[in-house]
Every structure is written in C-alpha cells, then in structure tokens.
Image (cartoon, rainbow, N blue to C red; front, side, top):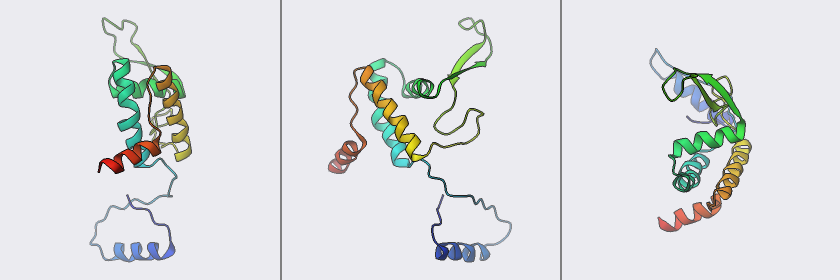
Length: 144
C-alpha cells in the first residue's frame, strides 16, 4: 500500500490511473497512523520468542494470552469437546488488528507502543529480559 502525502503526489497518482485500461480495482482511504511493520517485526521477532520459550508455549499462544491480559477477555461459544464439555472458550476482547466486533481496526503507533510496554511488563514477571526496540535495531544493523 502506498501513501500519498502531497498534492503533486496526488496529481501523479490520478494521471497514472487515467492511463490504465478498464476495468480497474482501486481502493482509496484516509491515511491512518497505524503501527509500522518495524514495530510488528519487533513484537513477533524480539519480544514474543523469549517469552514463549520461557513459558513453554508457542509464539501464537503468547500473543493471544498477552492480548487478553491487555484488552480483556470475552467468552465465545465453540463446539463442545471432551475437554470442553461446556463449549465455551475465552478469547481476547480485541487484537492489534481487529476491534471487539472483529472489524479491521489497527492500533495506532502510540497504542501499539503502550501494548509493547505491557508485553515488556509480562516478560519481566516471567523473568525474561527483552531488549528495547532501539537496542534490537542497533544489534541487527551491526550483524548485517
């Protein structure tokens, strides 16, 4: 997805669209201050793996657990099984990409930064040290 920030960029985009053969599929919307891919890579590549290792769970399980701790839980009806005879499962109220209704709603950069702070707190409670983002970025630059 490409962002258009200036009037000249908008003019070039519209000129480009006019040169394209029909039919076209075009999606345009307001630019949102959502988390960056770098923030997402830090969360899943630096933060979650050591927590998962220390707790003995998968990264996806840790992600779901921390989402629930951060945003709360909601009980959802699921098929009954021998281990779950009531057919109820707790799931996070929201995720970093969807709201409580399951509609796409990315956390802003600021909200995402607060979420990562919560991840750091949970990691500390589990006895896991996680490098701050700027330290992790510097280590990656040095390794390259």
